Amino acid sequence: MDTPLVEMSNVDLSFDGTRILKGLSLSVAPRERLVILGQSGSGKSTTLRLILGILHPQHGSVKFKNEEVTHMSRAKLNRMRQKIGMVYQYSALISSLTIRDNLALPLEELTDKSREEIDQIIEEKLAMVGMEDTGERMPSELSGGMKKRIGLARALVLNPELVLFDEPSAGLDPVISSVIDELIISLTEKANTTSIIVTHEMDSAFKIATRIAMLYQGKIIEEDRPERFRRSENEVVKQFVEGKTDGPILENKKS
Amino acid sequence: MLQHLSSVVWLLFETAQETLEHTRRGRLPFRPAIFFEQTDRAGVGSIPLVALVSLFLGLTMALLTGYQLQSFGTERLVPGLVAVGFTRELGPLITGIMVAARIGAAYTAELGTMTVAEEVEAIEAMGIGPLRFLVTPRVLAVFLLMPCLVVVSNIMALIGAAFISDLHLNISLPYFFDLIHDALQRRDIIAGVIKSFLFGLIIGLVACYKGLTVKGGAAGVGDATTSSVVTAITVVIGFDTLANIVLVALYD
Ligand SMILES: Nc1ncnc2c1ncn2[C@@H]1O[C@H](COP(=O)(O)OP(=O)(O)OP(=O)(O)O)[C@@H](O)[C@H]1O
Ligand SMILES: [Mg+2]
Image (cartoon, rainbow over all chains, first blue to last red; front, side):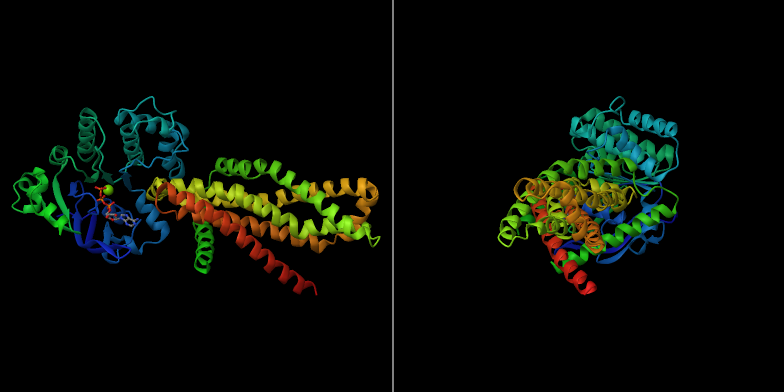
């Protein structure tokens, strides 16, 4: 078996005394497409931030390529981050820069590529997400879904080894959603990229995943290949996958 | 307050370190374009306000001191008073307060909005140090421009004083300059220059710190902006007092 690209073990994380993650363990092998499911506020975005070293766990370890993220020097952490692309839930484009400059930013700041090379990469990535001809516009002139796609293109400009998608298809129309799903799949098939995808769309989750994990009450309660995950006996998973109102999830909220 | 102060000092070191690390790899620490954009906003844009306020203050100070000193027949002390007062005290202080209100507020609101929209985090997540990329050009811009603005403030105050002296106190322009020349000492100028740089640094750092630590959406940005201006002005006045004590102790 390959050594895992990302390995989180026994991670505890609290915000102001509220424990969000309680002994979360998760391991991601190269070329996997791991989908993380979980309720709103269960800590999915938080988990992605831990991998990037933006948040630090109170307990446990987070490793990227066998190196402890928490102990990295700033220079090392920045080098690691250049190998990881992050697609933000709310896009997080730099509002003062044009779309073109948003995509050019990591290339200009972190590589020695020439103007022409940068232009070419930008054209290519914009085409990938179906957003040609928007280069000169400002982020505020785009719709939420359009911004999301630009955010995706930005995450890919450095050809990262690992891409973290935080709800990549939320707020996109069904056609574009499918395009994005295909894109996520083709990244692993063609470019050997590993992906971790947080999503609420069950259809797309089962379509793109090579493995699905369910985050519930601060832990991964179930992880399996999609076809087996769908047939899981776990009540929480069953309820979540089928989207039913009765089951342990809501009951738990009431208590 | 003390905790905030140490965080601001920490921000200075972290920023310096991040910037140096990047320069060691043979790259520019930040984009010159951002730096010039900020100097334009912070410096050129502040000139009218600083000039106008300083002119009025110079006029007022000359009027008031002239009015008092005339009764002793010593109104020829007025030009020196205004010159020394502005060079080592009022120039840096008034400019500092105006820059804190104008530039400090803008920096905090801008960086605060970026923080709330996760833009700062996105920059961090890409492996671009947000401190060197966002903080360094801004702090450097106020740091370098404060002394220039203070010079503008001093000159405008003297113009105001010269006007009153000529009209009201019968001190002609050449005599006015002679009196200033006699009164103003090198140490006054040095004190003013040191203070200007110091205040610029404080305002820039406090504003960026407040912006980067914004919590809680639009209301948070508003609170942070108010707090940034209040803190910067308080700290500037505090350091002004401290600087005066140190300078007096040094020269006595
Ligand atoms: N900076 C923060 N300070 C305090 N609490 C936070 C912070 N960030 C997240 N939280 C809390 O941590 C919990 C998990 O947040 P997170 O954003 O990871 O949820 P999520 O699973 O991504 O939810 P969603 O599907 O709605 O995006 C939430 O209850 C949230 O209130
Ligand atoms: Mg989230």
